[in-house]
Image 1 (tube, rainbow, N blue to C red):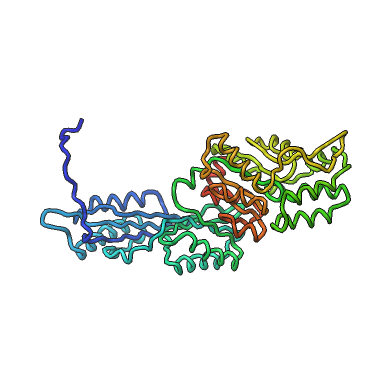
Image 2: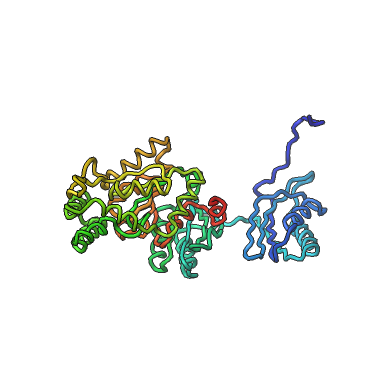
Length: 418
């Protein structure tokens, strides 16, 4: 119980109160931040309050910025010269004590107000990230009236990635401007709105062929039927959106008639996971995600794969098998472009997860409905037709780069994987 429970009015700076910025730079070491704030509290002079703080350490080099404002006292508020003189004494004391540089300048005029628009995260990824990608992104952001408020590194392996927090830019204009930078520099640049929704994702659905695994299963089966070139042409046209997927699927499956069912086992055993696939799944599982696959391929391949990876759900088409041989037909509901979106919605409903908290990853035109239905749709090494319509795109060879788009740092990934 406090000795004096009576609330006491606290002094509040007025909009006209002078402000100062202290910028600390130098080798990082324990106690620098504590020494600065202790000096602000203990050095005789005008009373101040902390308005803003930003600190970053880059390869052992500290940059710390602190904005303070003068508080009213009996007789009025300290003028700006008095405040800055006080802060200069604080700076001199900190420099003498810990050997860092402390610059002092006025922060009374905050400058022009930022343009309207909710803040966004801009993630720049590459292996490597070329300087012109960062420079181009910065110019593009400034060109549409945005401002970079903060930059942090998310990862240095398997890709290098940086997250820019951007204010004052409208989402569509930001994505359009940065898409041109990505195309010109070869870096991947993703845009997401700042907010709780970004880190509240709870379910992810992955396409299988050319996303979770390398290559297309139907092409491997066709090769065993001696019809590889024919089927590859149909597959490419379907993935580019030039053919109706259901129609193209039936045409490709028809050429498999007569193949022994054992070839399904052979193809499944020869599957090669996309680099980073296991890391992505294991990390998200340990973070509490529901993880699954939705494929225009075949249950005879997909279901055992889901079981091996410990996934929560799987949906795919089923090849008809009679007397140990493929008939060239399918049984049950076709998982096509709209069918993939329905499967995502079904799985989300089963686990009680709102659609805005879901993520979908795919590469083909038949993934588009699923990508757009999800809270975040990621086109992974996708055809241009798909990249242009998805929420964001990744053109890295590593599937676990999805983690950086979701805002997870490399350290968080390492902490999550046993």
